[in-house]
Length: 269
Figure 1 (cartoon, rainbow, N blue to C red):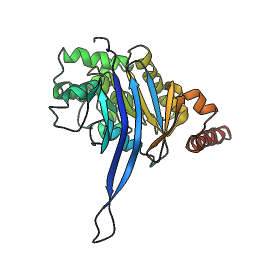
Figure 2 (figure 1 turned 90 degrees about the horizontal axis):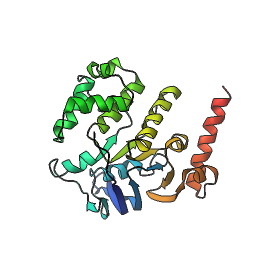
Figure 3 (figure 1 turned 90 degrees about the vertical axis):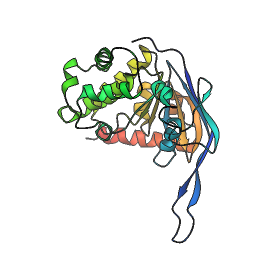
């Protein structure tokens, strides 16, 4: 595979309201979910996005993936504006920006082999080159043996399936990966394996990573910088180490308190 060129995915002042069901016989009420959100991630760098449930993380991800159109503001890749559109018009963007979902069990078709799962995006996006070579290389990059290509998700462990999900994103040679809670629900050894793969992609492959999570420890293992999202706003942004050791906003302090509480609970076992 060729090396990844430099690219920047940028959100500028995103505002988005979504309809919420109202009472019977009334119109649905529109609630502003994103309030002027701005952030960026470039190839070869990592950005953590941390926030509690309901902070707007999922809506922001959907907007970055061109699944939601902002009411105002913009998403750009290399200064090209990204908005929802037809599969054909977004094909170039889907190749450059790939998504790793939280739950591989819901995104990997259990009827398909790993080879078929990785071949599908290559075909759908019209990616040039020898597909079998790309698949073999992608599996190698996430440290899965070539023999895994003939297996189905039910024959693999949770950690292996999460690495398949990462390989499925890698196989098209994207510039940027958006990872949504990629280690949620994994036990410690499998969690560490996936985090090491993500570190390698940034360090050795030059890809950009936006790591979305509520888990500051997981983000700290991978991301140099972190943004804290609360009530649809970026309330704090800076070096991850500073946000861990000296959080300024109440939302960041609460996430840190939850992190420390989890650590104490584990130590008490």
